[in-house]
Length: 91
Image (cartoon, rainbow, N blue to C red; front, top):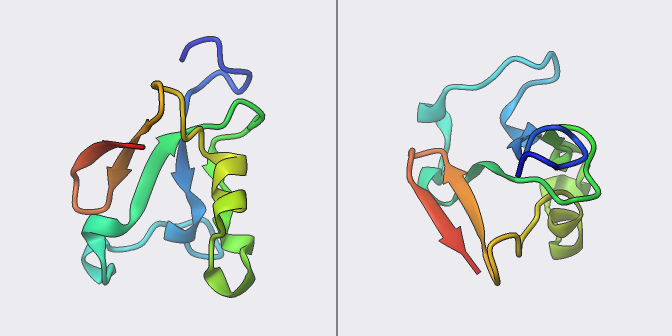
């Protein structure tokens, strides 16, 4: 959505980067078809990465996810890109 406050509409999952900001090998992902790479930003988000790396024990709760990801920007669903390269609109 071009009028998003961040100036962009998609964000990157920061759990997929190392402490220095470098990426990771997709081949090292244990669940590539279930691991989110990018999704649409929640309207309150003003930056592009999803700050999931700060989640307690790496567990992203529904509330934390919804604070970063716009889960209902296309009616009752949103678009997601996964590590294995597939995209899906999920409700």
